[in-house]
Image (cartoon, rainbow, N blue to C red):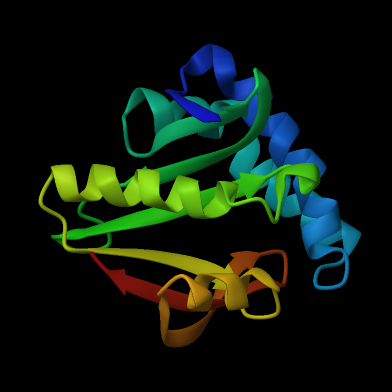
Length: 165
């Protein structure tokens, strides 16, 4: 059985652990080690995560299975527009992938979105990430492809996906 709890500041090391365990396997064929390190530092520093949590800019939930931490999701209501909830981050430990946990975390975010009368959820995924097919399978559609300059000559080459609730 999967359980969830809303992450607090004390959970930042857990979120960082999941990201640092997941990214190399997820992105090793897509990103250089230098870009991966840059992005992890940019998005998962204690300072950045603290600001996101304290301001409630992003709401984080951690998933556990039999008391073992297996993943997390972070989302934001009414972003990038009213009635839309954006999933900013969703990662599962490699050992937890393929067992319905990703879908359960997306459903958790969708339930929260509905609770504030949001009518769709959106997320960005690297257009070369195999998770793109997973998102399509569970009802997301590609709205567009867009490249984002994140500094140091690096791009995030994303598919922007949306799913009606």
